[in-house]
Length: 341
Figure 1 (cartoon, rainbow, N blue to C red):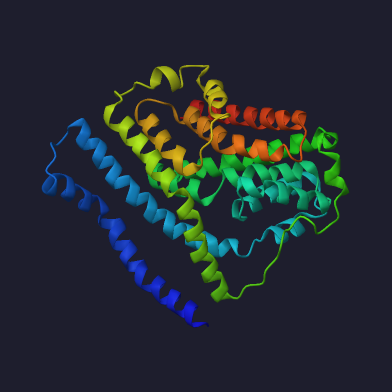
Figure 2 (cartoon, rainbow, N blue to C red):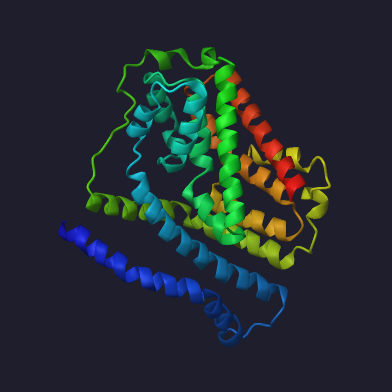
């Protein structure tokens, strides 16, 4: 073990009990700060807004740091190259399932959509299987799961993961059955294997620890601003929007609320860190769970930057079909959970 890895390992051992203590007593610390040190008026709107913000920001950051580190270690076993190889030669529906599951654990962002797409096409992976991966990877990621678990509980997190996987599997399967390869730019099929830039690295366990630490630095540094902005908006909604205000706009009894929320969400851009705290506050004010999940999925899963980047390799008809198929799946999920809950 290198000296650097040994030091990092010691830091992890020391910080785990500190993390546990902070997480367990965070609510008491915030209440002490609000009630005894700042001495704000109990029950006032501004007080509850500040309390919500001061509690949720460190809670989410604590959860994010721990789970991103753990998932970072897991992800070190699932490089894009290994993912590509594992999908080669798989039949269509089996490939859709495997691609969707692997999408959860594979490092992915909008900027890597094109090289991953190229690598999959070069390897002869069916178009529908490739889309299952491209849908699952950004929508079902550790940040989304962390925030949903921290703000809503494990049941909602499981619902989100399950429905996200179903959408990725079915949408990819439908796209595959439609035989839409003619809407892929012709130059994509002409490039030589190995030119996509996907690399595979062999890591020992110390290297995987470093990978987890690097994942924390990279991901947290990119999303902390979104966390703060999202929770700030959520805190404002929590403190100032009247109870049940959103019921008339996003309630389960409003039949058009689900498709409208998806249509509004498609052109918007936010990651999970920015949108989930807002969704939490909307639900508190009367928005239904199904409508809120549909809105969140459309914002995360159909992001405008990813569509713009994919335009480099896909023709517009395929992009619109992709949006239509995934959007329809999200709408069905929204109605389903409005009926169940």
